[in-house]
Image (cartoon, rainbow, N blue to C red; front, side, top):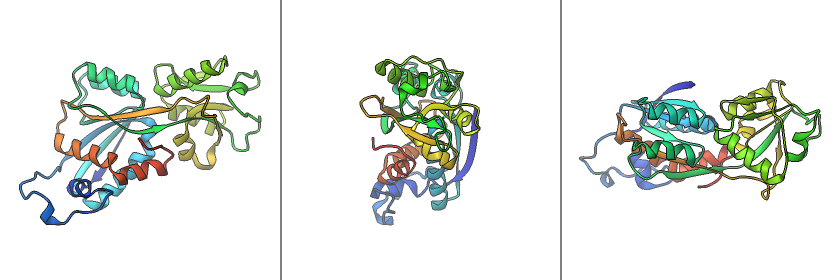
Length: 261
């Protein structure tokens, strides 16, 4: 489990959402009695969201450094398990609906989850693609060392759906606990290929190369987000979700390889 903390400004966040697109509303448009969403906000988020959410944190911190957000990045299945076991959290952002349903079915979601972005699968290979991997079928070759996320991980579930639909049988060398671990194995040269998200390829820069999976073989990933019933800071939690789903939040996600919700 990776836990990251950053000082964040959420006081101006509600102003930004009220105006839309990250614009600051005039003071007279804000209810003078509105509570400021200051304090700590703990966000449990799928590992694939790391870079996008960290940029969101950076932008919010420039608005007001008086509040604090702590991120817990991990596989969605790990996060759902922690939440259902009473781990304190304000917001849950999952990489699939299945793990959000685990939390919702336990009565731990304060309001209907929102789909806030989507993603597509891509094959991560070593820079220069030395084995000439062109698609899913090549992943079954005996000379290709493949790593994948475990089946209970959203990225692993999506990958298996794509492989099954394409009629490709593979024997992964390892099954990882989250998609960033798959990416890391390829980047470090410990594997020839891994099935990750398009956003992970963008995050890796020159460390890996991406091989696109055609849309007719791909499995789109939908990301829901929700405020939790046990949120210690529900006002700030709602403000965070509002910013992620705002026009500016969507622009940041798109910059990191995600698609519009």
